[in-house]
Image (cartoon, rainbow, N blue to C red; front, side):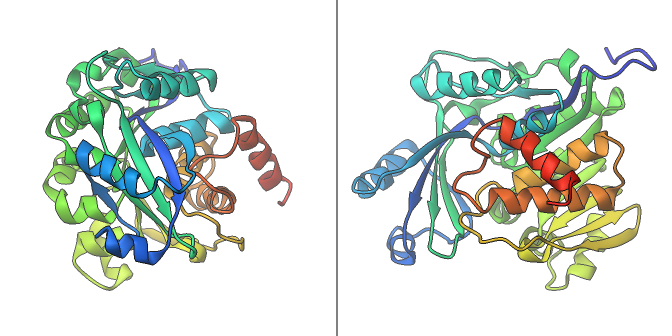
Length: 339
């Protein structure tokens, strides 16, 4: 049941999404072309295809880190000082146990059906010299995330429910997202959805539409996803359609910053100059910063300014997260003191 009137939520954010181990490799465009991968997009693969790709990268040394889009966002909220919970599914294997340990050591409560059968998910993040990330994902048991992995009480006791668009690719995951949204709506919990990747918009639009229902409180997407969703090459046209989905829409624009649409009012917030090393996780960090800042009372434009700053920090390093949970608090202090 929802917190009693006047009582603070137990969690600032409850995320639902995939639990993955990220393996990051430095590659060139030739490798992407030879592997028939679409640059800048995420491609779902089966275990055999994943193993074949990893074999072709056997002479490369990867970086390992727990990942998953919504997990990265919850991690950011927690790092900035919020309270987080995460619903996911992992196997009883090394990858799954490490994922859970990383989340719990950060102070994030993990929820879900952690079964011993199957394999936990993995994501190959392939970064080219221009810092663009291309991903191939084997979901493993994450593909079977379902309503059984939800905790109704945790959702009801949260200020925000955050769901990644990648759930649209799984029948059971999409059903879980719909159930979570309906519960959140009944308990007046703010529902946040991210489109996550252009491939979700182009290949799994029906699933995204089911996740969105009759609308949500907050929508996150990047410019390419916004244009794909609206079927236009004009962002000003696209945001009109997006504003019908949510009263608050944040569209990330890369180095140009982000466009905020708050109850019809549009504000372009500039980006921060940085040397881009790896764009992996930029959108996840951005969303986490917005959710945290809004929870602290920031208006939509100011929350986006903090999010632009945070995203610029994560793209200046390798990986989707900062190196440690304490680094998020340090980032927040730098922003508040003018960088």
